Length: 236
Image 1 (cartoon, rainbow, N blue to C red):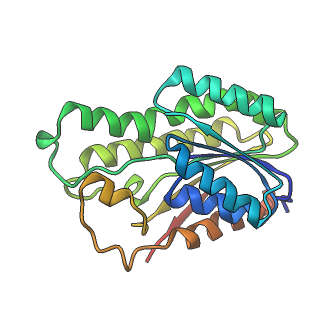
Image 2: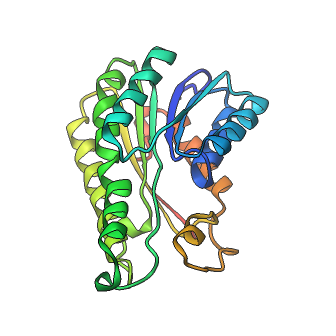
């Protein structure tokens, strides 16, 4: 079983929603947390709560992961501050307001593809050399059910998520003989702010709670290599 205590875990999109709840859940396991997001005020509050819950060492890093140069400097700072990394959780993402592609403007398309897909690749690429040095390491990509099921009026969002699913599946093959285990999490609608931020007014009452999803991911991380859960579907 992977002992989570003192493991150094990088979480992107850690200031709200799933990322925040992951940080708080893993704090209870006494992990060391490197939390990345754009909103400093919210990150400061997450760090405070994580420390109260038992996180051994927690730092936050203000970074727009779509800025590749800033991302590289941020990841270098994390490795310098913590000495290494054991787990990467690629969680940051944005939602596409439901609409056909011909009604979307160029910026909306670019933002979705850049955040949900293109930023994940350099984050992973830059940390792989560090993860390879660990006795055991993990990469978990928080993808979405939209990486498996195509739904109407979600063309660009779905394209970004199918892309991450493909990236995840190839990583599994490329790293199969290494110490690094890869997983994709394909959750259904989650009760977070992500939909409201895009302008969609969904009733999220019956969606998956991010706290429950965080429990699932903590369970995944705690399992031994021989029963590694590499493809996890979560939802009702």
